Length: 205
Image (spheres, rainbow, N blue to C red):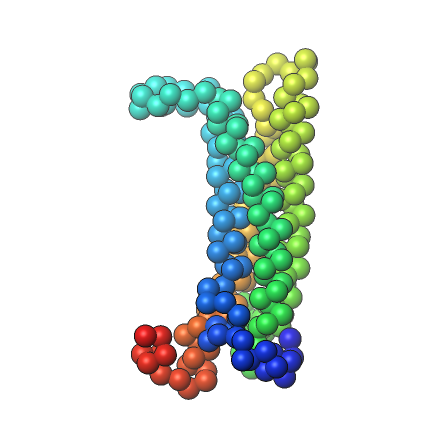
């Protein structure tokens, strides 16, 4: 956003350029990523359960295949819900960003390019995660209940492969976000204080 417009709010913004001490978006991002990875991991373990059953017995862990799929479903559902807040907070904080215009990231992108790609990527990932949740729900409540189904496996292999592909996209997208904070100093308290020539030892006490 135009720095002059940001200056109009300067009285209510902290050293990190936000009206609150800790940025919300990065925390929600890690919650989204964690929930999605847990969902996919438990579904993968559930699919491979017949081969791993002896491991659980050896470790004296009482677990049923349905329990693993339950964790996969509820974490995917939670990831889908949380991601709406993650993307919303991200766009709000991006509107308050005033990154330097004369820098490039390790990927050769300027701040605005990085922010645009990160914003578009966030919406794209939201759509993918919601789509995965709908697909997961169909497998749980429709495909898993069909009479002709010959196995108690609740998810399809192609669903797992799609989830792994999305995890790679999350990695790339997360790297863009990390570059915004570390290389451009967006909403980075220490970076903003240094750019304004303030003493960190005094200000952050």
